[in-house]
Amino acid sequence: MKDHFKRTYDILDSSGKVKSHFAPGEIFEMRYLGEGMFCVYTEKWEQEYVMDENGQKQFDVVYDSINDFQEGLACVRDEKDGQTVEGYVDANGTLQIPLQFASGGYFSEERAVVRDLETRKYGVIDKKGNYVAEPKYKSCKSFQDGMALVQTEQGYGYINLQGEEVIAPQYVWASNFSDGTAFVQEEENGPVWLINTKGEKVRKIADQSGEFYGSCADCLHISQFVMLPSGEGDRVDRYYDKNGEVSMEQGKLLFSLSEGLSAELDEKTQKYGYVDETGKMVISPVFDEAERFQDGYAVVKVQDQCGIVKNPLLQK
Figure 1 (cartoon, helix red, strand yellow):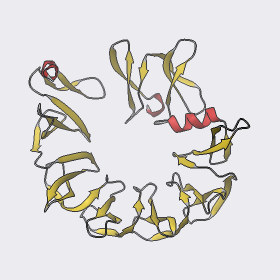
Figure 2 (cartoon, helix red, strand yellow):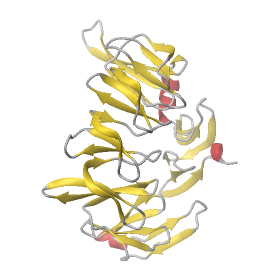
Figure 3 (cartoon, one colour):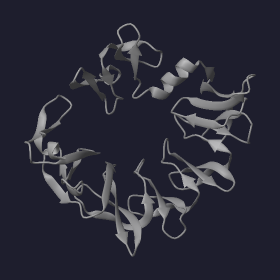
Figure 4 (cartoon, one colour):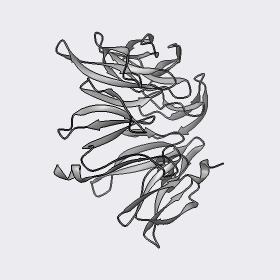
């Protein structure tokens, strides 16, 4: 614990310029909250205050916890009448949405998924804290492409930004929408289809069923357990893009992409570089460690030194 006070902390911008500097003993620990905001911790790992990227204190943390900022708001948690409640503060620490929910998610497309204290079901609120989708769902995902995946006793379906059920809950499994399409399964052990935002079937993607279904933006993963002749069980993984089945290598690559690139270990050099969705090496393999891209940048490491690389696909 004492080693924390021996550390210096710097906040850098994307060019590597130091925005703020903290000498040993000034800060015990800090955590990035997104959108240029940081949470500073005391030596007891208690949240103390929130500051901006220039090191200027913005407000004290008077709640039990604060989550990351997204679209200008951060969810905070506290105790009230013996139960945990959550609400939302802005970048000044002002409580914009009262602590009135059992849980609250991040804002996406000016909507956030919350769990109601009374019904214990999930609904969707706007930035004023008003329900646009009543808390009646067993589960609800964040909005993507103007659509949110919801679950009722009848199955999975989709609502729009106004909270309207534009595709009625009816599927036993479904993915989020991405670029106007989503993967869905109508019945147990049935095929997986690609649908559009009207719920119309675009094409059949997979015939076989599985014990596990997963998806990313453009890829479907179906995992199936099979019995071998030896009597032992094994897992078979199959991958699909929006046109049909792809190789396991291509599927794993699609799942690992971040902003169009994926870190990959080069067998010859035993170093990490970055490949695009076709498997072409875009950033040479010269790193001992390579993280995912976020906001156009990724952290890399050579021996014991860390640095930052830009995503060439996003540079104009």
